[in-house]
Length: 163
Image 1 (tube, helix red, strand yellow):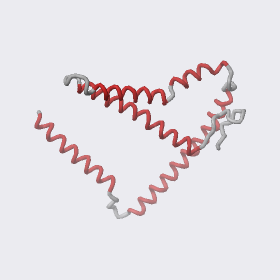
Image 2 (image 1 turned 90 degrees about the vertical axis):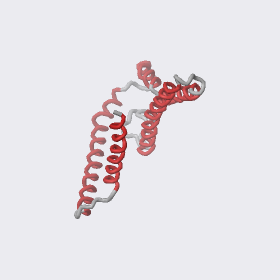
Image 3 (image 1 turned 60 degrees about the vertical axis):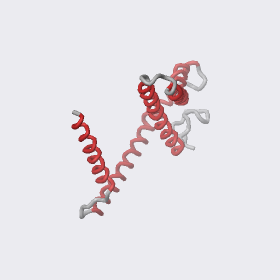
Image 4 (image 1 turned 120 degrees about the vertical axis):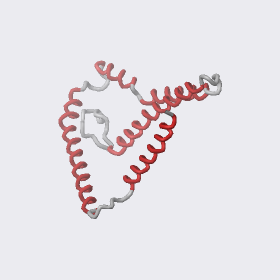
């Protein structure tokens, strides 16, 4: 069984290298320019379609939902404030960072039999940290790029407040 596994890893890595090479190299087809134009046209249609969808959703969903929200500072907002505070990314990231530091500091202190379990724990915590941090980073970059304000900035509900 060990020999079958040893043959599997080189085959898998060879297949992955071939696949990556096929994705990176330029097409060898004789109609390269036509394929490039089609890709550009499809990309343009995709961007145009997604932009239209976003605008339609802003008019139909955002404006309606923002209009239904209670005014800022009213007592009816407390359940939403609790949910917002519960899911803030900085709390999650700080907790995961603390768990990772605990796992890293505990690794040399535990007996050798428990070290793999501590290492697996630290790796999983690191994965969760990155799984939270990367989408937060992307979302913040999109927010900064788009520049859409909060719904009640300026005193009244406005779904189309861009700064």
